[in-house]
Length: 441
Image (cartoon, rainbow, N blue to C red; front, side, top):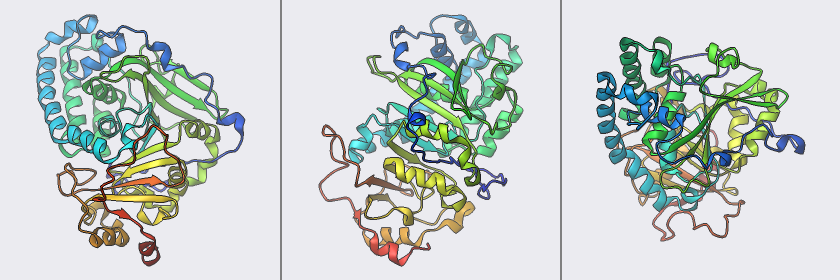
């Protein structure tokens, strides 16, 4: 994510500051998952046709036909027909140019990390489900964290022709950055949210799930209070009176607010639905103590594979040191480019690192985040292979970098394959020397 906003609470200049403040508690009573969370497996028996109402809405928002229900009649409207044709072509292009190469590369190079069903944690994500799903399609749980509002499922039946057309034009505008440069510019997205009916990330998440050929089973608003109590509300039919987050753009500092979506992935037999969480969080280090119970809930989803791209270099800032340390403490694997956690924080006794692509100076908005230690790594071994796709702020093939970190002390399951290829062609970096030379870089 990248933004031109400059706000307090440690927000990086020209970027979002999204900080997950994490406090580790040893209280076993708070470490369990709250009883109020509905088990997604209870939804597995739903019909696999184009079936439940949430799946209808996801497909319709994605410009994909539904066979029945009230939305089917709206498919004849010219605005939807044009929108559908446009995204059929755009998504085919995105798949060919980016998502399929990412998926194939991850299967080949990331080994156990790509095939694991472990939870994936994606801070600074915006509503970007498409990229994380391409890398980790089998994850049992995806946890996306960003600042954008939650949003609502649109009420198409209440729209006149002008509003209907405007809505889909706004969806195209909201998705333009992802389709063209493969990350969400939050200032662009905020502008669309402010001036149009696309009120937050939920419609975009549903779009991506449908275009990823997932079957959406259930959509719930999710909130946890300071006492750890979890409440959920159906995404259809809930009003701002019941769930105040829908009535304001302001963050509620006393409640963690989010969305929980359960879905069946394409080709699955439906007996093990996956879960996508989106949490809206903006917590700086000085307030990390406010949400111990939520952080225990989050920790209970781990150990994670953490995924970071276009992260605005927020993890460089000591004002987010608790979030950074949480990722290092609770991740089995980390896949990131240089805008994630700086190299100097990966202790060589704890992490095995592998590098791909090429490292150049960050884009102009973040030029001061250049890492001499990382540059030394890429300069030291010419065997590091280029990436066959763009990644992060360098969205053209052959320009991007990617680091794969595997924690040494966490044992892989006995049925998991070794990480990546074992033919010795990859540069496995023992970076103790560079850490000594470049601790400050």
